[in-house]
Image (cartoon, rainbow, N blue to C red; front, side, top):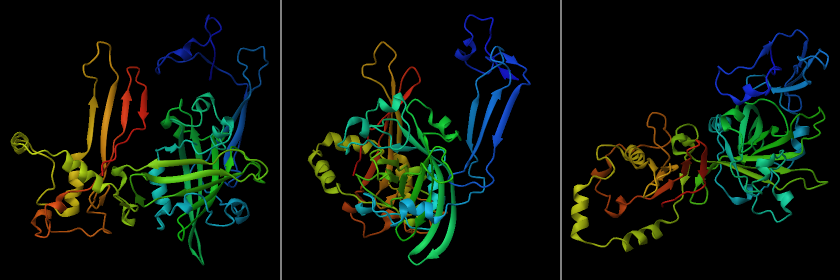
Amino acid sequence: MLSSRDPESADQWEYVKGFGYTNQPPLLQDDQILLVLRYPKTLTLTNRAIRGSMKSLNPKSNIKYFDEVHISSGLGASAKYEFSSDKIVSKVCHSYPYEDRLMKGGFHIYKGLDFCLILERFTQGEAMIVLPSWQCNEADNFCSKLGPFGSDKEIKATNGSFKDVKLVLQDVQCEKELSRDNGDFLKVSAVFRAVSPCEKQFRAAQRTGLNNMTLSADGVWNSSSGQLCMVGCLGMVDVQGNGCNSRICLYLPLLFSIKQRSIIMGTISSIDKSARSYFPLSFEKLVRPAEMWDQYTSANPYYSYSKSDSAIAVLEKNKPFNFGSVIKKSLLKFPKLEDTQAFLVSLSLLSEDLTLHISAFPDPIPKSRPSRTDVQMEIVSLGPLFGRYWSSGNSSILEEETPYHSKAEYTEKQLLLNVSVNSPLLEQHPTTISRCFSWRVFMI
């Protein structure tokens, strides 16, 4: 059965404007359709997609006729993948690790052998943020390019800020390689898919076709450096690898601060020496406290507080003494460390108590229906605790069994806790369209 336009209707595409399963297109039975699919015998970097076409055998004058449709689909992570030879990978990673700006930045990077498990969990069903190319000093048409990817009018309209442009990582596969002299190696394969601001992230993550919005990537990760270096091929390429002209470097940081909030960070750059195709594209995934509970947490990620003295100075400056405030505070109950819990457990419970999800409205509320703003406050770190503490699976951090307040060595000054907070604002418009503002508050 083939969906068709209604020739008797004034608007032959009227059904497209409707919603719901009850609004179905007219169906025609047609046995004059030729479908051809070509499956690769071996799944590789340059041959990793099902290719095919569907065309009508009817004459053009027939109402059942349609133009030829070209088909492309990846085989997914469940298919057996044959990793590329060192010849192709060395094209971009010949001097491993590649010295990009992140490698030179001196970040504390994850180097454990659970790299692939962590990468897949942090990217499964999630999207990474594409960062603005503010450091580009070239012409606008060069700086506003979305790396090697194609750009629709919505992406071009961002003028290089790439607001609401996402990057989805799909079909991550890994294979352990025999140890070399300078550390353990993993071969890694994946597909990077760029998502336009006008496209739903969930829908884009379900796509499998390869086109000018996808980079098929293949490379190596070394435990000695913690860098994942990959060669990227745009869309569908030939077996010689023509079109594999991108270098991808990706890291999992372990050190966080008021300036560094990314749990994944990376760059995509061109290796085409004949012409500068595009300005290096940077991407990241911001840390979410609720994700801190598995092999990544066992590697002891930590937060470096840098504004403690400034925060204490503000606290003392804005703390006038008066009996009214003392009486008021004595009548209120505030979140606090539990006396009966071990230290890390108490910190984790307090982090949950301090987490805030609430709606905000204008004051006074206007007569017209206002947009609703959701205010969130997520505790990234509290004292020495980063993320959340899970006693059943966090054996790398020694839990203090003695209740916090029962220890004599803790003074009143030590009861002041450093805290780091992410506070995004999400505005819900009456039209149900969501916009996320890149506004964060960091309390140290």
